Image (cartoon, rainbow, N blue to C red):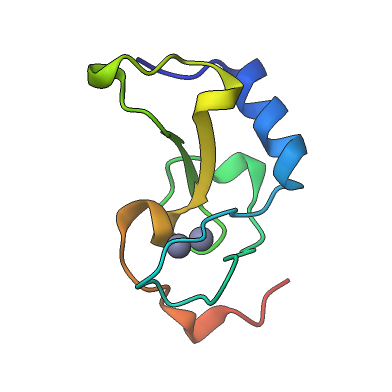
Length: 89
Ligand SMILES: [Zn+2]
Ligand SMILES: [Zn+2]
């Protein structure tokens, strides 16, 4: 039901600590690429993020790295980023 830290670190390495969301209807075009902060998991702020199941557990999805995508909080929550502070890198 929840990803282990090891799994999240693996996905984190794959995406280089960025949001890999490509959903349409979001504020970003193509890939989101929002830079994330490892220590901000579950934080609904800039650089906050959460691990999401590609296939939901209730549909048989596992807690594996292959089934995990790391999303910035805005994508995770499905709302546009409040871009007032995006200068911070
Ligand atoms: Zn994103
Ligand atoms: Zn997105």
